[in-house]
Length: 196
Image 1 (cartoon, rainbow, N blue to C red):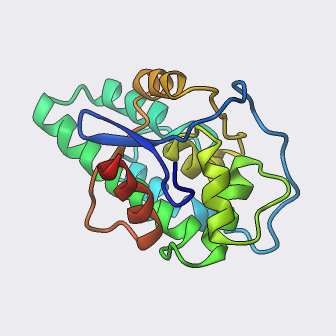
Image 2: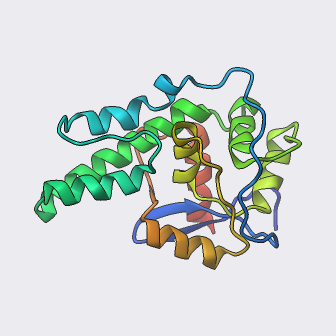
Image 3: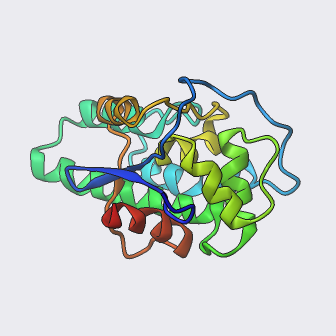
């Protein structure tokens, strides 16, 4: 297996990042804060902006994005067409949030470093290729990597692709297969699915 390839799972036209791993399901210990992390206000801006369109909805920044969307959908009792439209708008917010937190270039170490820190990697690899190798040994969900900056929750890892797939289905934490607003780093991660 090439160290340049990140494997992912594709289901129903949506994606969740995974890579082969022999580790057990774990929650990595928290690491010291990044030197220049996004502020809480800026790191939640796109997700919060989506939910702020519904002023009567009780937004909770410490709750997972998809759990909040399910709660909102239940409160609104949207017809199927409206539900799909709003879910698509939320997916756009997730893509923009990923770009904001991790950057848009797959060639810059800054974005990889932030991804590795969010995963709880210690020590953090020194090059993008070393980061790719780390991701080859780790099964992790992309939505969790976005949510962690807002919720403060550790990002769980999974020992197998099947366990990650089951988690992704149960929580509905999918990224869109393709999105026009995806930055280079996210496109790089998502593009690998299409080649797998």
